[in-house]
Amino acid sequence: MRPLVVGILNVTPDSFSDGGRFAALDAAVAAAHEMVADGADVVDIGGESTRPGADPVSAEAEWARIGPVLEALRGLPVPLSVDTQKAAVAARAARAGARWLNDVGGLRDPEMAAVSAEFAELVVMHMRGTPRTMAGLTDYTDLHAEVGEALAQGLARSRAGRTWVDPGIGFAKTPEQSLEILGALHRYTGLGAPLYVGASRKRFITAVLPGRAPGDRLGGSLAAVAAGVAAGAGAFRVHDVRPTADFLAVFGAIRSAGALADARLPS
Image 1: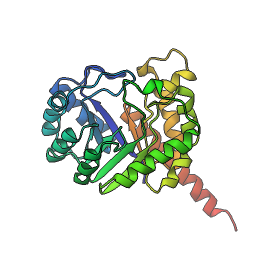
Image 2 (image 1 turned 60 degrees about the vertical axis):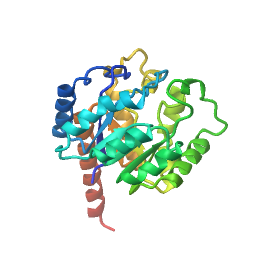
Image 3 (image 1 turned 135 degrees about the vertical axis):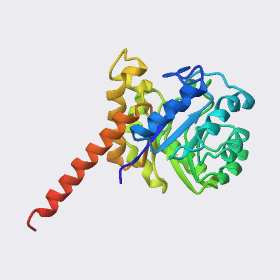
């Protein structure tokens, strides 16, 4: 079975890639249905930007953005995920039908750890500080060991049905550190949880392809997906659903054909 494709639905005015495009309810609902038609297995809805330097919003403001979208998408044929760091928002989202919780704070909030019990699936991500402060928190003695330890602590606090780990590409990481993590994703499979990768359109791509705007980073995003597949990742959070689903389908077919050819070789 191919890895899951998680479609990103930002209903914020200030996200780094598509801020404002889906702020209107009709636009958000249409985008979610298009993602499913394009091959999304999960739709991840976010009401607070987590781009570097982003200002926080209140729980009330965040819920005002995502609550109507969750309600309007109750009949969607794939699970809904909520991307939030706030326990109060997560709890309301669970009652509104969200089955996945994507916590970029990695369950550092004890209240969020308790709320995670209301979800079938939880993504624990690594981040230092907050989106506003994380760009200044990129000094590591041992990058992989420190990221891995924080993820292990989040795993230990989880009460969800199943917990995924996300090393947090671009979150308190320089572009070079993000590239290093993508090149060593296999190190995070040893945590005993499925691996979730969110690298779509992120700034690390411009370290290799300078000057590329977020909407012009598909090639770099797919390269990160390839690295994830090679490491055994089970889910990819992406903006470009159809190209990612197509890539995974063809990549999987090539692998299967190669395995079949190998099986036919005389012993």
